[in-house]
Image 1 (cartoon, rainbow over the protein chains, first blue to last red):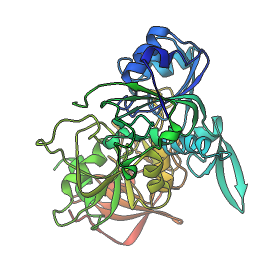
Image 2: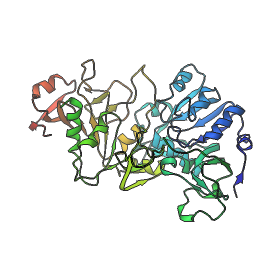
Image 3: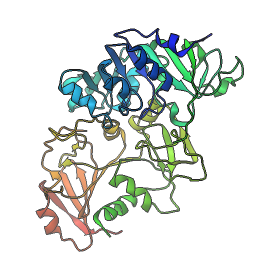
Image 4: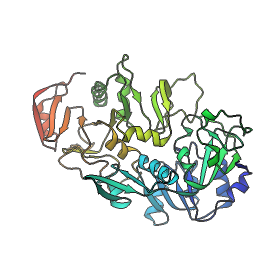
Length: 223
Length: 217
């Protein structure tokens, strides 16, 4: 059974120096109340793992702009020029990872695998800086390590009190594998949290056994 | 017809019914405007849509009904939404018929450099490196020369690579070029363009196909 918590108490479980997997693509799907509360509580030296960080106004970019992030691992940060700037000034470490490898590294962590072997990034900056070339049976691969978090912060559309999650359209993205890959999984749920058994088992995208904490959210999806 | 429209029209002729295609931002995205009505292709977006179409204004505006550049779209009948691992499994697993990408540089070995200019904006590769190694066919759709008039088709890329020896076809407003083991084969020239002109404007070595013909649009 997932625990229903106030956002303040839920976020207080996140500590300085934690590695945090954050769902979302362009900040859509990054939990809004949880990020608000992280800004308020001011946890420091976080390692943030999120696809793109979005901007300094929405998504993980807000935490980077506030100086709470020691290292940022993403596939792209084109809307967040402050990230490469901070990296250049040695105020934050920035690791780039091709988006498909990024997703698989998180999956590897959550599924008990020792990393990934992929052709993506061979002969590129990825091989130079962040991965290791290996030859197996005459084929070249890049080995990349799993990406595991102490905490995952996710957003879902629906949930029941057992923690079962349903996402809305592309809200799913990285969140299904992130729910596997962290010790503590905190989910902000936008629709009213439902009683156990209200969601048909075949509709569930993430089984509740993976979810530790539910926070009642309430954003609407109008663009 | 301007250069970009010509390129998009020529690339659009490469697809057949049921193809699964990822179009990069900018010029490649224009290709969809010229796909004939009797052909359905499944447009793949990195955020998890497999089969999107143009926006349907009758649907509520929704932050989660957008493609990978955050433009509003619809999901076509027969389309699906998947998580990121599945979405890139489609790419890397050989289930994507083609990707169409713009570029800063492409070379005669088929290597492509389209994510970063040395000393320029450092934004990350997003899904581009996965697309170029995973798609069954990598089509570069680009203007032949950069804004300062230099050939984008080089003997060897000088910018940081997106992928090494991955490009199969290059379509520009001047030419249609296939990348082969032997080198670049010039197969078509755009209407009103001569083979000599293409060779003059190309830094890379070109092998002129004996069957070289005018591009049909």
